[in-house]
Length: 147
Length: 147
DNA sequence: GTCAATTTAATTGTACGCAATTAATATGAA
DNA sequence: TTCATATTAATTGCGTACAATTAAATTGAC
Image (cartoon, rainbow over all chains, first blue to last red; front, side):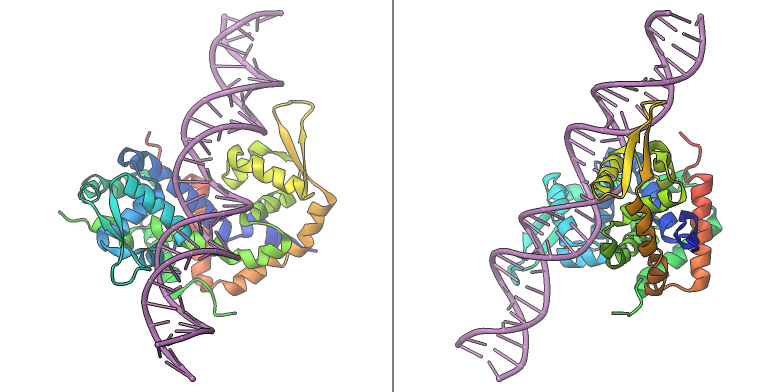
């Protein structure tokens, strides 16, 4: 029996998993001064783009569910960066809005992308190809329509 | 001030993070019957390739540290898949060896890679390019030698 | 040989990540 | 209108991840 298919070197998903983790770890020194984790950082990015959305939309945007977002948003609220307000119209919805401090934080965060790029050792061509393929996967959906 | 650099659409790392998570989630239905999580699965793959290595080597292989591996390996041990043995030679080392059941599980696991490929909607060309770039990043190290 | 420095695992503490469930609210077909 | 269904957030439980610390063992410079 040939078990080559189970070798780590023959996986596509393992390097994806490993690179993703390592890259996320690279953010830490740049996010620590802002008091944000990586997940909190992308949450803030989503809000800086679209303030005042509900948890559901935020989750669709970030590929996260309420089990992750609810406690995370409560922490951001405790830090004074966002406000969580249950909608009067439809009490199922909780809308997340940035506070003044939340908007202010963007001034510091604007430096992060460039800091990270300097730190990440990847050729421009590779970065571009990677960007294209990954976004294609996200846009079209990752799963075949089997079951 | 232009904040485009903070748009999610302009990030390389966000789709990497999102795709990695989504792909890992795809494994669940195929790994559940084996009683493994994704992290446990790649750990078993490493052991099927190189049985009897210590926690340190396993961690280097998988890009995981003892904080993740120690409890995970204890769970695999509790399931009867591996044995953890402190070395007589050098008591700092804990060697992980597969049990008979651990080797047996490979017979079921061999189906997983193909099941996943069928399920993952990616073009062959893209998969190949992705594979090449990600492994290049892992091989060379992800970080520039700034410090 | 001795002890400071290093190595290795384990532990601790914080923060995800997600499946499954719960609870509250809203919707819509009869 | 009414009640079964659907939607939305929150909760629960389990399993990572990883930084920082601890503890035990080993090594090596002197």
